[in-house]
Image 1 (cartoon, rainbow, N blue to C red):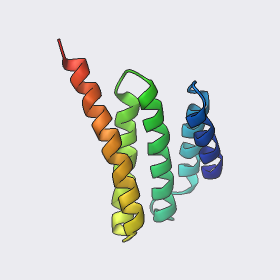
Image 2: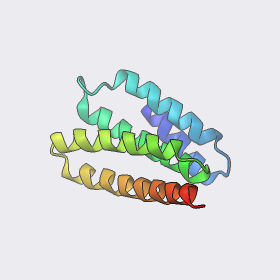
Image 3: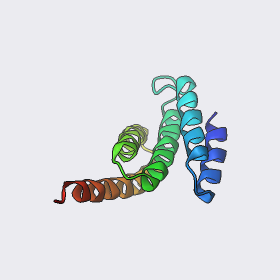
Image 4: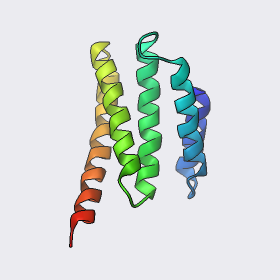
Length: 115
């Protein structure tokens, strides 16, 4: 399911619509039913990061903040697990995605709050 999600994610990044990205989100969520944090924390973290990326891509294409909020939550979970696992490379990868999602979310909220 994680690999399928990655395939949908890559296709969705190339297409204009959101259908493939939605399929990626569903696949990553299905993978997370198997990859639990307790059982395989680094696989779980990698899938959480992938989920965050798919949600962020959806959030870039939508006007509301909901998908970006979900992306930030997914990235934060992945970051915590990678930090605990002392996976420095992946910590930096997740921080990058998290920073982009947080910046876009802040911009989106600022625009929504403007009179």
